[in-house]
Image (cartoon, rainbow, N blue to C red):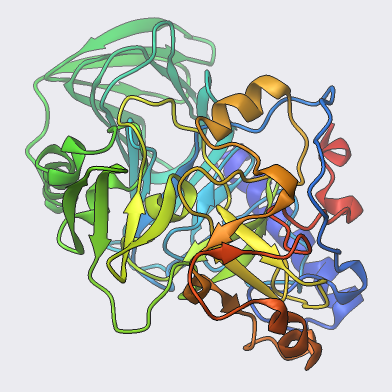
Length: 457
């Protein structure tokens, strides 16, 4: 192919497939399983020690829309045969992960939402790699297809950098941008709002600023040509505009920050109210008997480890930010102060029982209530944990209080064994009681070598 970067990705994928064939006989495992030999034990509450490695990013993207079956996610820690790489709704995306189109259907689309920024992809073979994503950097590599970028706002001094095979784009202001990438054609950049700095490579490399209402093409020799006037909206542009409108008109933005990924997905799936104790609360429209962290599955994502992936179309923000509580026997999500600094968490739950499960971090878990402290197993600086915890503090004596109906048993996982039921018998049936100190609010510390950050340095 003409695109060396895209070929590099496929060599990576094919190499992984060959390894899977040789070592595992191409065996297919359930999507969430980890190798049994590497199963972790739930850690008791312990103080995380600062390490030399960088803190996890407080910002992430997530898959907020996609045509099912047409996309896959590949990350540096993927072990061939341990899970399907098929992309699913609500999967978090961070540095090193790649969203790759697998179907030849040109109309298949996908969306990555970060709150302050949104990427949308279409056409085959589309691909986007998140090369560096943290609190200050937003760098991606476009590998093919059509890409739309909506930048709602930027922090002072922040830029969005998009790398192409023939050059790069640098965005330092809010706007609406589109990149068309086809193998044998010049790369085309359209600016509908904002402005972008275009840098080409090749013997005629150059740098130009493309203003709103203009487009530019980059040839393989580095020549850049500015064309006045943006092209007429096509079907992809109309889909992008419709998705943008959901964000622009979101009623949930009155209660949570627009920096929170997935806020607009709450609209139509629940109701907001003001509570004298918790402030803004959101009541989801759910079936009788529903409880938080019950419809979905556990996956593994470095550097956080066990990560909850909810099955509900609204199921990103309420399971990675804020807390859950029951108000008059109704489950309510409490996002916290609107102006508080947001820090992504893989799941805000307590864990119960020793872990013998192959696809969950513990035999049972429950949603933490407002004010309850969450202790991750991954290590980070004290400053990071201060931002992450906010007003939530560690309880005295290591005991937590919760609504007993919040408990979710990993009964669907046969590897947990029958001991799970006897272990969970320590929990009383009444609401709002102290929990045994054997309950952990951290995460299983899976130290498989392929998951260690040091393996990538």
